[in-house]
Image 1 (spheres, rainbow, N blue to C red):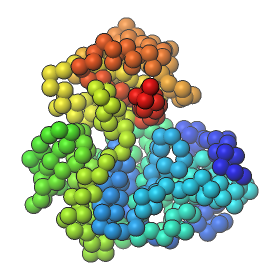
Image 2 (image 1 turned 180 degrees about the vertical axis):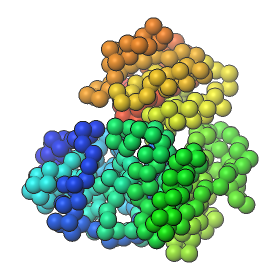
Image 3 (image 1 turned 60 degrees about the horizontal axis):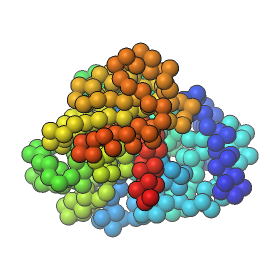
Amino acid sequence: MNYQETLEFLASRDMTMSRYERYDWDKFVKKIGLKINFPFIHITGTNGKGSTAKFIYEIYRAQGYKAAIFGKPYFYKMNELVSFDGGEISDEDIASIVTKYQKVIEQYDLSRFEVEVLVSFEWLNQCKPDIAIIECGMGGDTDATNLDTNKPVLSIITTVSLEHTAFLGSTVTEIAMSKSGIIKNYGSVLVGKLSNDAMTTIRNDAKRKTADIYIVDDYHHEQHNNGQIAFDYGPNNYVINSSAKYMVNNAAMAIEAVTILQETFPVSLESIKKGLLAKTLPGRMERFGNVILDGAHCPEAIDKLMESVSLINRGKGVHVLFASYRDKNIAIELPRIDKDATDLTLTTFDSARARDEMDYFLYLADYKYEQDYKMAINNLREQFPDDIILVTGSLAFVGIVRKYLLETSHE
């Protein structure tokens, strides 16, 4: 298969939100003998796992390690899924690996995500990174990135809150148990600031597995200045290139992670500071003029986003354009946005999972609905050129709006 045929093959295997088990995946892994042949950090969490992974990746690259990173979702093309030493996987490598295993993939009825994990691990095995940061797709124990044959040098659980309840569990305790599935026997795990129920669950699982547990410390003296945030963690001062308050938590997790691994993967203070100054992931409090894009997709993330926006709005209005998937808890998200927003407009986007006007019917008396997100954002920019326009609700939606803004900025 060529690259385009490969993408079509993968599209036919998209089982997102319809299947979440690993029976066929485990049989496939055993059949082909798939292993991770490089040291890696395994990371999961309701929020912050992608940004924490990116900070760690940039710190190790700043130190001179040939580092790699794997994570979803990606915005525009599959090549964004996995990077090694600053470069993404090529079209040719993707097509070659999928073609090599096509018959076995069909035999074991793998999902698209499982194939993406296969492609990424196979490619990284060829690249031989010094260290890689592997981000779970969803959960932990059932996630395709979680291979029984390999133990990470460090597991990380950033946050735990209600998400994907149809698959991970209906309580925070059940979700924490799912995410703690990345903790290995006699391994090590770094945990963010969690609720008592989540922390107790993870502590008990770590104890059962005789795993060392580390808890991220508090940061102090946070200062916002010209799109950057300075803060103290431990005895040192750091700066990140972001105005998102929630991003400081992710940076603190990254600092703690590389500190834990200092004996086997030493890094200098200079490299940590340089890595934290690297450009953050797109769609995380990303600015296009007076438009802010943020892919907050659950109540916890929405709350942290609105807290961050309140710190930078400097008395300006905040006009929110919101779209989400049907499985998201908008009963909590919309009132939280409304608390700090000047106004809120609901919209939709091109996805079978996206909410449309009928899915918002309980909220149409309170909030305006605009079918065409392009028209909505253009109207907001025209009416409020000096205010903040915040686009949020889904990282997929933010990616679509981001592409539109990039295209129209050159017109």
